[in-house]
Length: 202
Ligand code: TYD
Image (spheres, rainbow, N blue to C red):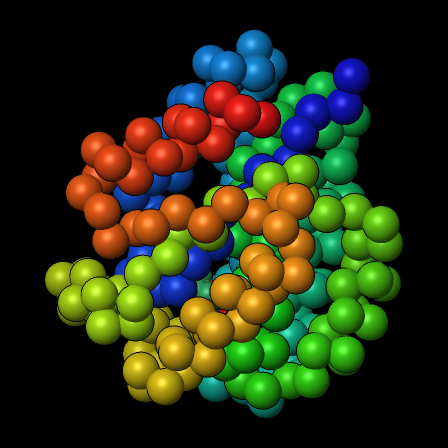
């Protein structure tokens, strides 16, 4: 049986990273299958090299979007699709919804253009479940400030992050069957309880 593909999304500072190990643990326990944890951009040797460039080098917005999808196709072909075919479950820290949110909402690339790249990169393939960790931008900014060194996206202005959040919320509204929005302003224990309810239901 084919495994399931679960993605985790949210603005920078939403607390997604805090919950990655818990989601993996839960998926492994509840699915009874191997649970593979991976991330985007990245997840392959080539993807990790592209991640370095994407997170730290200035580039045109279109270049950024194209490199995100290039890294994604490599990730799908060499890691995600083979694992799902073996019956493993894959949890991915960010996927195409992040491109819609950051390069679409944040950078202003027309969604029709991103939709064409999405259809080229993974025709007919979408996550089975997407956890959207949602916090107001001001809350995310406070959490980021505790991090220290910020990457290219984390260093963007509040208005950029507002557009990213808005694009995520719109994408979730358009895809209610696969999105589950989790109020990530709650204490960690409450967020975990919400994650558990969603994974149990899957
Ligand atoms: P992030 O997932 O927040 O990792 P960390 O928790 O280690 O900081 O960092 C990835 C960054 O890349 C994040 O700011 C969003 C950005 N990104 C895009 O802009 N588009 C994409 O398609 C993806 C996958 C990520």
